[in-house]
Image 1 (tube, helix red, strand yellow):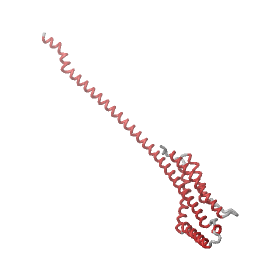
Image 2 (cartoon, rainbow, N blue to C red):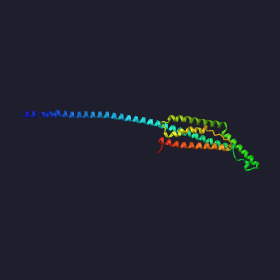
Image 3 (cartoon, rainbow, N blue to C red):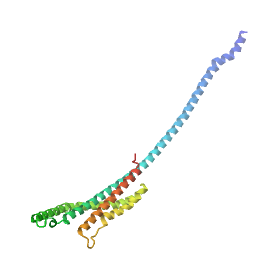
Image 4 (cartoon, rainbow, N blue to C red):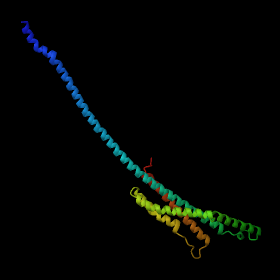
Length: 243
């Protein structure tokens, strides 16, 4: 009877002693395998995400590099333009000063006789003053050093304007379309500064002729000043320097 009872409980005993622990082990093993499988999937997904991030970083880096190169090209072009125009404006101011000083030194409407008709000492002093003015003018403008310096500046500006026009044509795809008006003004500036030789008209007084030259240089300098102002506005907008 007891043996019969033992055999009746034997399946349960086997299940408890052998099969149950194995089932528990199998459950843990499968869970670990599932966890490893999930980890492998997660790892692969992370690798894909990392590669995607790296690709995006490379693309952004390349786009930034291109934008930076374009910006640098714009800045260099605007710097070159403004620098050249300022040099040209300074040269026009110099021509104005030169003509004014020449007029004061060699052509003055005021004569000593108009003020002190019979004062011989005054006439001598005035004549000495005029000679001093001429000597100072020649030392300032007609010395070998002054002529060489003036020639260097003139040739430098001529070259700058010629090169600038060609350079801007090549770089026009990078620059604001608003610059076209200024670009078309370069040739006019060149003519005004170097090729527009004002000639003395028949019957025209020398002082009047010199005044006309001075007015021409003043007007040219004023026009160039306005161009520089427009250029600065365009450059500020195109380079996004507005705050």
